[in-house]
Length: 359
Image 1 (cartoon, helix red, strand yellow):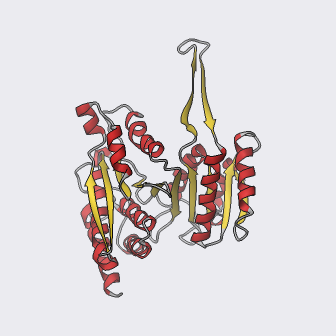
Image 2 (image 1 turned 180 degrees about the vertical axis):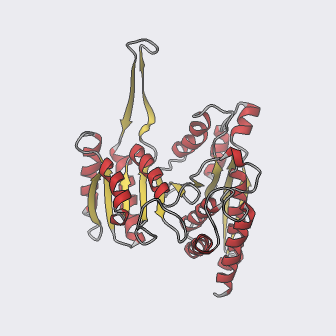
Image 3 (image 1 turned 90 degrees about the vertical axis):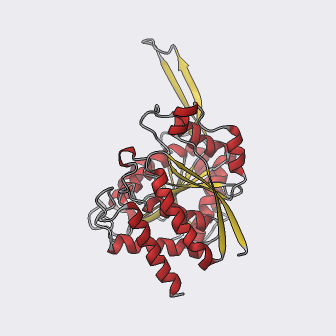
């Protein structure tokens, strides 16, 4: 086999290891048919390790992860660890340290999956959100004045640099071209209120857009976007926005595509190492029960292979997932799928083997 990919695996907390196991089974099944090899190295970072050692993610591990071709993450979140410690110490630390400046979130309704939006189906719900991932309100700029007193002041600043905005927008334009669907890119902002940050975003959006004449430019306020995602999701092709707004609208996107059990995303550094993950979290109450839905993790693995250049393997995995949702599962909810976690993995593998066998 001519290509070997080194994949760093962080199974994480709760049901993370269970869904990652199924995702890796699917990736392994693609190796021989598509002519590549995958070497994996597991890293034990998460809540259990933090409770044991007091260490979240050492700098030495970040340097090791930097040498991987990609990172596959299971889930972060532990009921015995204060919220924020793991999220900031692992997720945000990796995004910033590895300069994963784009969060890529497909919002796609698969066959057989329930959406709360009436009279909408897979043809209407199929768009992608490109979220700036290393700036905005998430840089932690700000502080307190007179904390704990009646006169307390809390300031949190949104930091937007021309470089950071431009590289995110450029990725969005190029992704829109590659996607080659409607070739419509919508900037999501709040130019009527956030007149500094989104003045920069809008100017850069229009200036860069001149280099992509085949991409239609559109703009929508973030509040209107939330309404239209529910009322007319078919209006959207690719959306691009800042860190905070992207965080909000992608969760709404997950709900209209059927819930967290099918949503996957990537933290992308086009020039470095990127990280792929299911969106649903660690779901600790289902740990070890073999009832959690692994499809989001399998979709994350498909995104990872697509990012690595294994486009056909990624597409085949996605088709297998669509077959499973469309013809096999009773529900995406844990314990209500009609199959166990590992059996859902078996179904994906069976369809994948059949497709590969057919050439």
